[in-house]
Length: 313
Image (cartoon, rainbow, N blue to C red):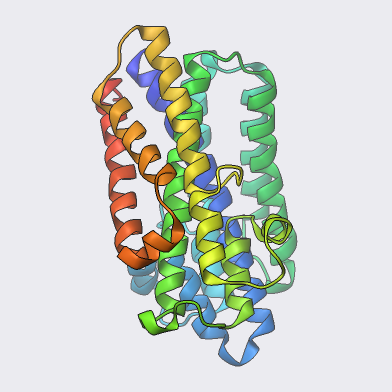
């Protein structure tokens, strides 16, 4: 059985890698929105900060929502624990702590990503260079994930890493959907109406689902379809359903390896059953915000339960 400190390092290493990529995607979506809606760019950048969950920290340091202030805070501000630079440094710190549990290739991919991203974010990024830098961040985090997936033994080391990835990813998708729907649908009477296509597109781009959505649905951005895709579609790799399929699977492998099930296994199973047993129409009828709020709370509790069960330091 892994030491709790090692399990914790693997879990948090992958949460931070996932968070770094998520932040880059949120900024990328905001940049596209601001470029297409120049008349209301400050509102778009404000939306990006709210979506990232860092509004309180941002407002303590900045009075203006712009490409430069928002991108700097979300990408490279050391006072923001969720900035890309903070996340990739935390990921590397955790990877170094569990280095003996990683393949050489996995460690080197993390270390290389840290060096590349640190160099790219050494100084404020001009707006004209943001697309290149954001693509670089997404590429480096994808390389870490691909190297880990391609070289690591499928044992408890792999399981804790995957659980961290998908708990972070589920939280990100749920928060983006909740915040964006609040911004776009100030009244329940707006549900199902045709609003700004750029806004709906930004939701999908924030979770790397823009093109695949068009494969599953038509080109129209419909609120119900977008919510269904990001919550209940088990084949979409950033949906809540897909995340929990993987969380349950990897927790199941831990139960097999260690010969014991814990309360966290039942918590994950129950959340997956809720996603499988629901329809998007029923979720809208009962309240999308209420459903997502419960989900985020359950997802956070699961993270705490796993940490306690497996003695994370």
